[in-house]
Length: 355
Ligand SMILES: *Cc1c(COP(=O)(O)O)cnc(C)c1O
Image (cartoon, rainbow, N blue to C red; front, top):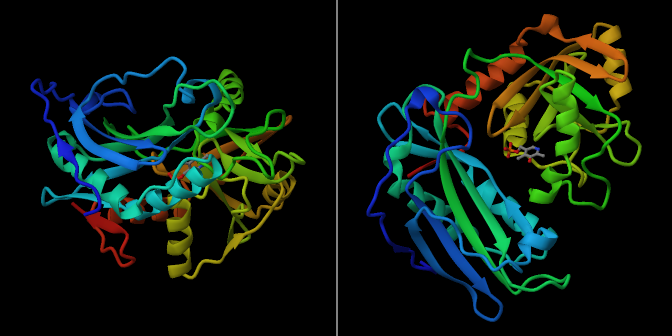
């Protein structure tokens, strides 16, 4: 292997949480992976060490100009006690595309997946076994060089932490209420919409808070140039079933290329259901509803897998989709994706990576 990973195990393992009370991203395992980058030396000193706070210079570039990226994927416990990952090579590829956009150095993609596997192996006992629970894996890179000028940093850390998470849906799949945001925008052409970077999320908080205050679970983002075209739902990709065809925004630079999105499109193709990756307006969605042609709306992402939408508000118009019930396609996609991820259904696409 190109790099060795040194391993220092914790002397004080933490108590594991009760799987029944797990929520999202509040508990972390005993260990973390760290690797450093320095200009002239490249990535070096890959290590797994006890989970602990980082020591950062207050002038570290990440704290000032947000040169930072992150990823998110999950591990799944199979019935036979094995642990598996879902398409981790896609997270490695997306990391390098994000890195390129933020002038962060590239990382060896095979090593990236090996580092995830090694860390999960060390903290394997933390993978909860209750239905719907998993470990959420958070790889991220920060610019660590102490320097207050604006230019790409000369030093970085690549870190991976693990968080056992509970079932996203406590009472099973449930439709959500979504607010169509026509004031703030998430991304515009030429910006960073396709990159998984902290800056995109800090700038979305205001809008999310507004939606919450109005009683909505999330926002639907419109394009940043005309506020007309449908882009994404919160931190998920968005799908609309209209006239028997499935529409989703194209990967034209302003939306995040979701791995769940890609998997949904491939499953729909397997099933012979037409998918249109093309621009469509929120006006067309509301018109389709008025014509009785809008049968389902759902969001896709690693955390919730498939999240059906039961209600949409755009300006002063509210529509209820599919009787506010889970649509058949949303349910079928959810069952198939979670079935493949947990090893209960055959993996005909080579998506699953066992530890
Ligand atoms: C992470 C993310 C998604 C979903 O990507 P997955 O790879 O499916 O988890 C979609 N939109 C945004 C803005 C995201 O950050």
